[in-house]
Image (cartoon, rainbow, N blue to C red; front, side, top):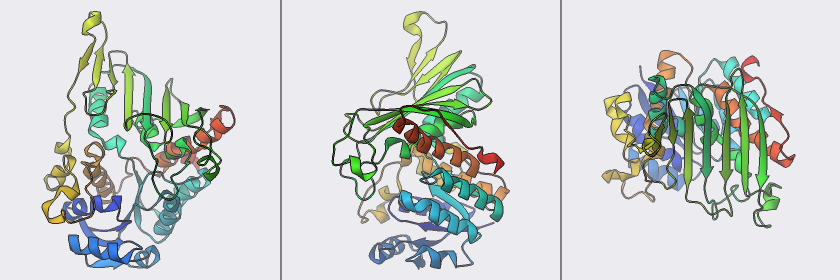
Length: 372
């Protein structure tokens, strides 16, 4: 079975083209980009014949089976809804939407169309997450007691809608792993804002906070998680961290990127409790044709060296894992992970966390997306 894939948005989105070209179940059928020069540059570089300047024309093409959306954040919900209603499966980069109402609408559109939806959350397919998941499933961590994650980034100089963005409006990279490890559903959230960003940034979203930190309570579980985000005026190397505390072992992210994480083992002599570990790669989870993409980026390829930018090795090696999950869900006619309900829950945690911060930490309940 070959699925015809169309990619919408060719900045970050172009990273995925050769992965789909090599996946045994996909045909990299079409690309879509408003800028004709860029559309043709990418199309020529990767040998893709079908090219569209707008998504409506692409969705009218009956040969398109599935779309992978990599457009700006504020286009995600609109384009996802159009694609589902046009009878296409949808993979979409994070976050799912910019409002709880849009998340609800996408969940309903999924149910009505019978099509698959997957939010392409990189962290839950990173090698670090897959390593912790493996430890958990083997019983090495024991009972999970607490989860924690952060995403800190300096967004100064980023274009368009980024200046002044509330930190929690882009929270799935830290919400995803704490909810995803045990497939937990966030029930309610409380968040505090801290510090103040520069005055010229505040009016964009009427959001003053430099850092937002939230506690998440999970439904039908004794667990809660702590997540924090910063985007402006906070000194910190880029970090997407994920930490898990278990009764037998705990996993902690390194303080400096590139260093090794630490496993703490209970009941050892105190100096022997912490131990640095090497996180393995998980390419063996993937079809042989796309295994190489866990360790090198698409633009490292010699025949694409002329393209205007070089990207890294794909968010902890996650890109081919996400593609494989999305494609496998379609082929096997099952829900992908995360599916529409999970994606709505994770995205809404961040949206409601910011609302909570603006109201001094007020508890905010998550909708029950599964009962819509």
